[in-house]
Image 1 (tube, helix red, strand yellow):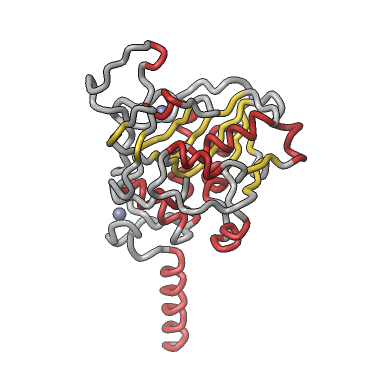
Image 2 (cartoon, helix red, strand yellow):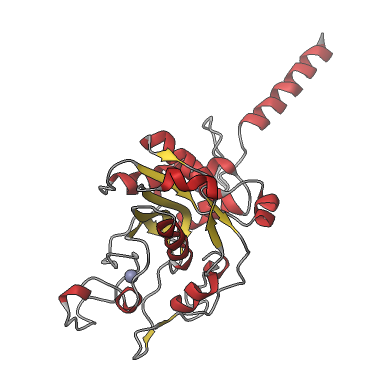
Length: 282
Ligand SMILES: [Zn+2]
Ligand SMILES: [Zn+2]
């Protein structure tokens, strides 16, 4: 009888351990709630939304107010990159800056492969989408991974986030409209416009998806946007395939204060200026 009791207790503990993750994966406090997400409510509360002036196209943080003399009203509210060369997408929405708990959560999803981390990220993305009028019959299209990376990770984080947004907003999703034809080399240290050149030709629309895309308002989904080079290239091929317009929605946006600005209007991105690992993504 004692042995049976011990056995039951042992299996109950095993079950408990399997169901209840021990600690918050971001701050290590013990977790008591029954949740498949191994992150505590305090860490989720710490996720910050943007509260500063940002470029009305790409979402980059603008220089301190009054720092730029704007002569042309057409250019008001635009960062130097969008002033010199407008991206193919209409506008990029993002919940908050890529830092702190939001960045940790994205790392948990991508590098620790904790798929449940897509849930809070999808909630933030859905909120960003709901805050805008994105036209009739929008369609969610995640930025695809190169198949080698997909195999390594086992899932596409952008698709996981888009699936959560689909459940919350009811907006249609085509997870395989785009394909990544080649992996791009690290873009650390490149200017935003150099990054655009670097990813040119890296994405294509699948032939079978063309009909469904024609005339649709596309919401391109990703976990994080850096300079928007990837978003620009995806938008370019989607528009060429017949999409009406392309919006971008990400949970986070890497921002850097504009450090230097050459006469050509190109913005230099000082490598590792904020210690980000953003070069790996965009
Ligand atoms: Zn925590
Ligand atoms: Zn911009």
